Length: 387
Image 1 (cartoon, rainbow, N blue to C red):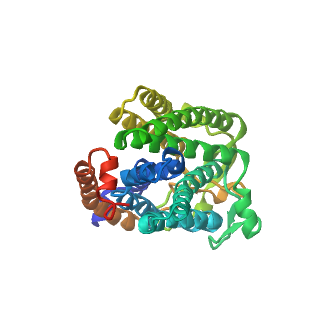
Image 2 (cartoon, rainbow, N blue to C red; image 1 turned 30 degrees about the vertical axis):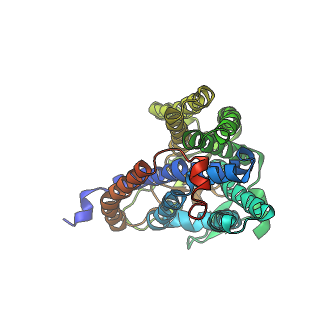
Image 3 (tube, helix red, strand yellow; image 1 turned 90 degrees about the horizontal axis):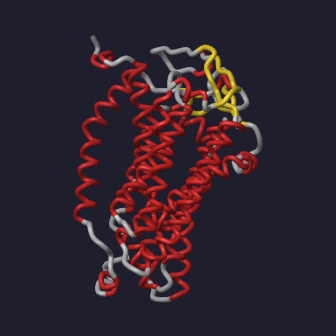
């Protein structure tokens, strides 16, 4: 028996669907508070020193946190090539905006303190704001569009074709439900960034972050609830009429998909997945209470739980769909018909089993070494060696 045949292709596909979710959640939990701090920067720091304190809470870790973003993109490319091709074709301009905003972050970190001029530093502070707020918003908008279905169809040669012009495709993403999902994403990461600042910074930065984070958490809770109601009553779900599960080359056109009904039918079919939205609501609520009560470590942990629950609820509700098509439901990409080959998934799984523990161990060690608050003295006494 060939080694990779020890695990069935269906099991490998589910494992890689779950691992993709883990990578996306890991990105949100780590780089999420980086983006949150960036988006909060102009508002939590009134003086140059205060803003430098906020920046230096994430200064030693932001580059390492972006590893999760790279891993997520790599996993999509290698494990789900049709998803990579179709999503990047449709979200190309949105992806470009996200990458342009993310590029502002390293430039802002590196150049902000190179000149001691107020206008220079204010400009880079707003660049860091854009680098945090814009990706957080657009990631949520993308999820909102995926839940509604994306207007593409696959040709017989599996070439993705989209409706609309190049710019029209981008503007079409900005529909009401998708913007609501963007509000959920932005507000929860603002809350997450505030929880991080409450742990790593001292007053007055901590106090301002706490107040803003409390409001952001309330908005995240309310918008997530509203999005759930809207999803149940105003967004069509997708389901299989006939699912073609094969060990050969992936071909979504071999399956028959029906658009209609509600995504919430998943909770009747798999009642246990209700744990995800419960985690989302409970985590956000406890993080808000923790911010108000001045708790630090537990607040950040509750914030992480809330984000995990929110992201998990999307994936579990949609399973097995990954990228449904609103134009041609039969072109929808699912776990069963959009993966790489049996052998590719197995080899990737072996490599992941070897290297993921190393990444997690190194990350834990870095945070342990860098534990503690960033103070005004840390910034003023090491002005030439910190951001």
